[in-house]
Length: 74
Ligand SMILES: [Zn+2]
Figure 1 (cartoon, helix red, strand yellow):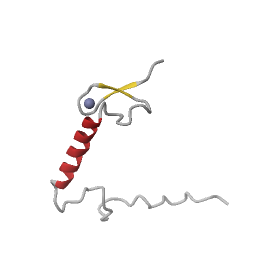
Figure 2: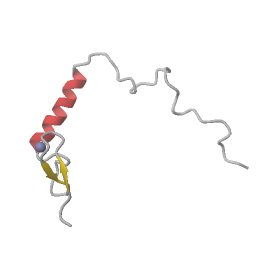
Figure 3: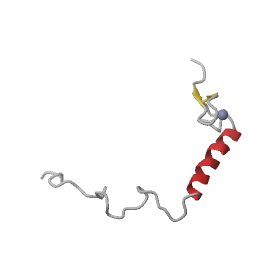
Figure 4: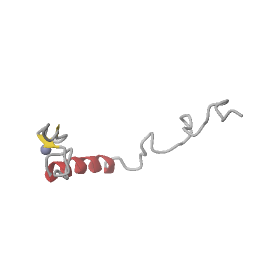
């Protein structure tokens, strides 16, 4: 088998998925920066609005809540 390839998320070109491609899954540094840049831009565009899943404000079940009766049986 040859080097596996993945579609670059930015431009769709096939990018080598191997240690020789430090930008994987992107095909190049340019595509990687484009993707990261857009990502950061979107975050900065929302001032003072926390992501709904970024803070546990109590409007969702706490992930730390343990179901009853699931402790170690003795
Ligand atoms: Zn690309």
